[in-house]
Image (cartoon, rainbow, N blue to C red):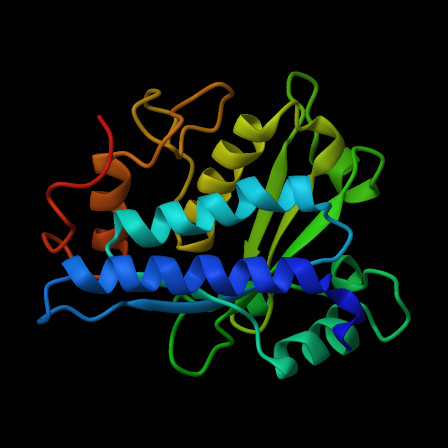
Length: 226
């Protein structure tokens, strides 16, 4: 099942996570506990160049929350689940053929009984789901689904102009993964749905994600831009 990984990317993940965890634990309040423990699997269709800003977005969310949100490398069972459930064991992406409505109805997809692994899927603008989501006055850059059993972020790779665009898009989509909605009220939030918006996780974003998970007032006061 390791065919879905490029070994060098797995190694880079592990080293990045270890460094981030060490840095976060050094500054965390010992009375606090992380409220999202997650794992991430990146589809091997992403190139190494594309993977770098994705990993940097993971690290930014972990660092800005000082480890209250954790993203770890996947397990062997995560890879198996990806192969059998999301790819149907046939090498073709099957997740878009599933009825995800019931799975997405769970009010807390990060509860104890749900899977805490999310998957990064690479698509292009020619994908039928992307065409269906595009509007007359917009072209989507990515979309996120966070259900109890299935969680994934699909990146429209051919619309990414550069690393910065992919990085901020991933910051935004990870916000959706943690349960935050689009924020159309201004550009002072990474959850603003327009491009270009904020280029970093703001203090408002941190406040919102802590409130979303019933941790209001516990967000690190010295973190977040703006």
